[in-house]
Image 1 (tube, rainbow, N blue to C red):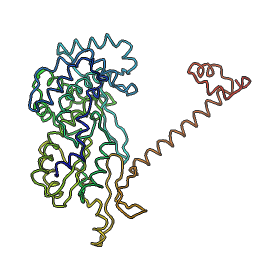
Image 2 (image 1 turned 30 degrees about the vertical axis):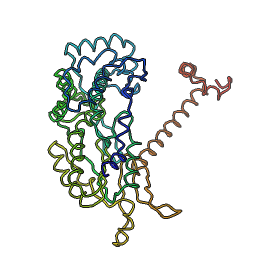
Image 3 (image 1 turned 90 degrees about the horizontal axis):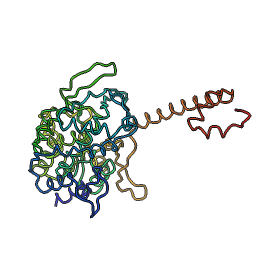
Image 4 (image 1 turned 45 degrees about the vertical axis):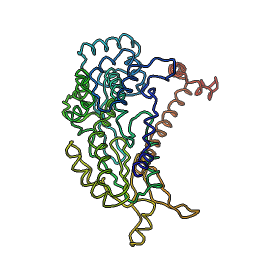
Length: 424
């Protein structure tokens, strides 16, 4: 009974219904021949213990072209300073060159460009931007790995998977808290996850399903390519994978599948007294419990488990709290304050009641820090645009012919409609 309710909350059936087109191969039809990765996925589904020893030949020119078109055309350039548009001007020639180097096993990845992005709490997040051709190779490699591991990943894993995302993860949280026997929530935070993934551990995890040496060597190359600071200083990648790299989400899911998911799933079946639900996206996760004792025991065991793989739960951000349909009433009877709230996937989750009948309601608000940062960014953008529009108007009204021609060449027709020919 408990396993059935768990499967319902964690929606494993979503992954089972995912069409192969989720990996970017177009819509399937009865008349369309089965692709190589379709067959890989079918075999992986049929035999969960099979090791694949011949995957490298799936890195075809066709797959590399599809990987190029899958990339974000507006993403920042890496150390090669190559944009999506400029690279596509000679796409067929460049794809052929990449393919030849891959088949000759002479393809070496360039270091990722390391930049810092501001976080809502005032700190900065380190991300890595790969060269464009490396993004293509990583995307194709992620599809190959995904064709195998999408059949292995458990239902409560939602991060960066086809047909799954934040909305499905938040739905699972809602179902668990409002419809299941949940009275406690463990809000877990892995400290610096992407920076602390151990390369040797990840490769050993991959070797559970892949024995193809050429594929394993390519994965290793993506891990040790190094990073280049904005000042041009190169540093070796000994541990971790750049957050923001195309292959990083796939690597993170594989790493946590073995380090966390399988272990938690086994623990709740063998050791839990009551119901236990976990929702993960991708390194952020919460675990819901029926009994506090289960939460306390799992919290201790989880810290020890993750430490074996170089990971640490954040001491301040990881906490077990009373939360659920009966949390407010139980705390009131014990003369305690309101239940704590927790943040997950951009929303603060709060125990609340409906006005019409006083029954429990799970309320969500955008995390205050993120909302303030977003509003601040919008304010700065509006200020810049007002300043730019004022200067533009002044230059146009002054009869600056060079500037007028520049605007016309840029297609600024709406701007000119606001002025008469006399003003211009």
